[in-house]
Image 1 (cartoon, rainbow, N blue to C red):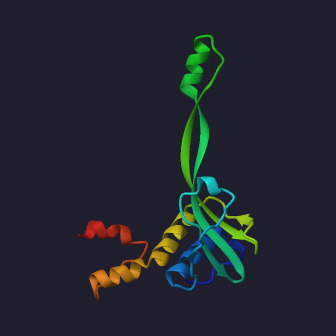
Image 2 (image 1 turned 90 degrees about the vertical axis):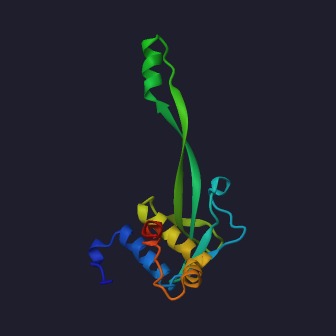
Image 3 (image 1 turned 45 degrees about the vertical axis):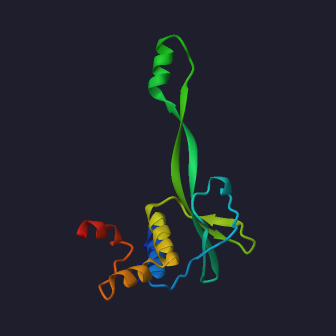
Length: 156
């Protein structure tokens, strides 16, 4: 990968590089047993952790619940003389990539950008040993990468 122009480096570039390093096993992730996070009650996945260039990073998903006003119910309520609003709960899966200090406290959280989900997939792929499983399963055939493993089912 050519060196990006330092004036135009984006967080997308940073996370893409982290994915690349993870796939090359230059950034090694591990499952952090018993880890507490700011969003521990809503956590859906294990907390994954790596240390790279003296920065400790954590990666995990949470299920977030939020309220959404139902505009149709609100309009109906107002037209019938009421002023109340109807709210509905919705959930969203949020992938967190954080830099933490030595005590595990979050000091920086990457924004919610799509490549963070891909980094989580690459880290899980690495930790579980999917490449070794495919190698054992397929023998000497070419191994799929995390980016094309979803195409496997379509090729068969």
